[in-house]
Amino acid sequence: MKGIVIMLDYLEKILNGIVSFLPTLLLAIVIYIVGVFVNKAILKLFAKGTERSRMDQTVRKFLSSVIKIIITALVLIIVLTVLGIPMTSIITVLGTAGVAVGLALKDSLANVAGGVILLINQNIKVGNYVEIGAYSGTVEEISILFTKLSTPDNKDIFIPNGVVATSAITNYSSEGSRRVDLLFGISYDNDHRKAVDAINKVVENHPLIIKDTPPFVRLSGLAESSLNITVRVWAKSEDYWTVYFDLIEQVKEKFDEENIVIPYNQLDVHIDNTNFLLKA
Image 1 (cartoon, one colour):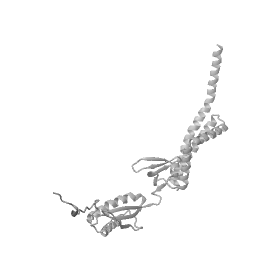
Image 2: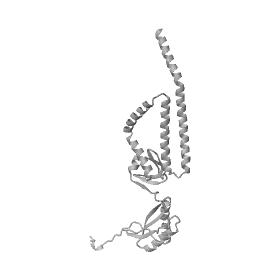
Image 3: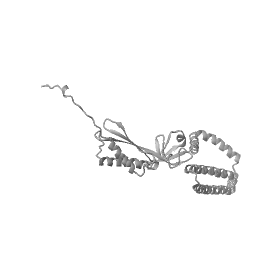
Image 4: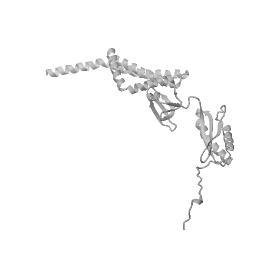
């Protein structure tokens, strides 16, 4: 009987403790929920404020992700403080955890450092078409850890910032214009000057080719089966592929009009009959 009384007293203390702690727990939950809404509100205000300014889109997205992480960390610290966990204990735990996490996530920290380097150097920006190592695509986002590329066939590629910062990067959009290089082969039976004139007419009539830089259209090689003509023209970066494919199609059509032949690979075989012996 005495044991039952002791147990009941113990349960009563637990219930009283829960009841007394319940307001604190509810307050912590409310603070967390409010913190989530405040976080979203600050991010919206930041987005609206930076849209009106001339801040680069890459910097804007990167800072937005940093602000989100900082506010979330502050909210969690406030919640832990409200729950009665001493600040010194929180700092000690964070410090110890920081060392452990730093060792375990050294690659992630390298990615963060890489993101900061990309932000400072601005080698690539959102909207640029780039080639990073074996991958190429349009930069959609540069976050704290990853750079997101969108490929022409609608695939998303996420490359760690640490890899991006240490890789060779080819940025096809940074200069605003690109040179379109093409090579056309014609038959040895055709006049190469006539072919050059035909290509020049196509180039002159194309509206997307930049005329400020003179085009280069010259006979550049005497191949085994063809006379090769090199074509180099300039276009805006966003018009590169349009100009590239247009020239191929329009030069082919112009060659057909001018009876200029694009030859197949040919092999001339000469037989010396004097080396053959007839046997009965």
